Length: 286
Ligand code: OGA
Ligand code: MN
Image (cartoon, rainbow, N blue to C red; front, side):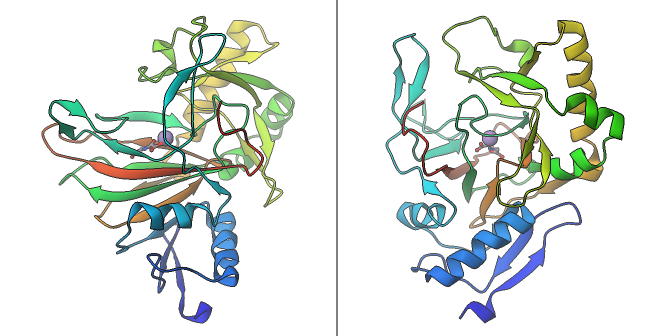
């Protein structure tokens, strides 16, 4: 069965399209391992034409780490910061009885990596297309290995040991809207250059949506580096634009890619089912 699976690059930048597997059925361990290797090799996998119930998607998420199957309840921790169980949600602008059924409803989103505001970010995210607008709403993926590799040696040396402060405001459209001093917002520190644990390759880790500043650098010096790197990581040569079709299942690696979303008509429905994948040792909350 493993031999009939077809892996084809999605673009020269990153990604692979995988056919010849029905993910509504259990998948043997050898095939799961093969899919994990394809995920490490290509960073984004697309499985077109999958008809999946939520439980099928969660089973798939578990091939890549610990699928977050909890119920997503928002809570506040003892410092009044927002926390919550990691779990399924809809990314959608659909409203039922005037209430949104999901999160991240409308329009364009800046580049980011899911869970970067946590000490243990999501290893991966799975997203399954249920309703797709007639135009726009593409998910853009940036290859942060390639972005790192393309830096000058001087820039690589300059950023090698830097640590960033990441703050996530669920309501902000970009980092400038984030009130970083607000103690309620979740936050974490991460290295600007990380080594991917599976590939051993170096990758940049920062984003226009969430990276606030560089720890231990004067504000203006840090800001100059960040602005240069944001622009660099978003260059078209590092970006693949995924045009969604209904029944596409995607999984992406948050450790070496950023993603963003293009605008789409507000009077059309968009709905995707999302399960994140945590590191197996990550706490369920926070
Ligand atoms: C997400 C996300 C982008 C999109 O689910 O984390 O950023 O295209 N989604 O909806
Ligand atoms: Mn996201």
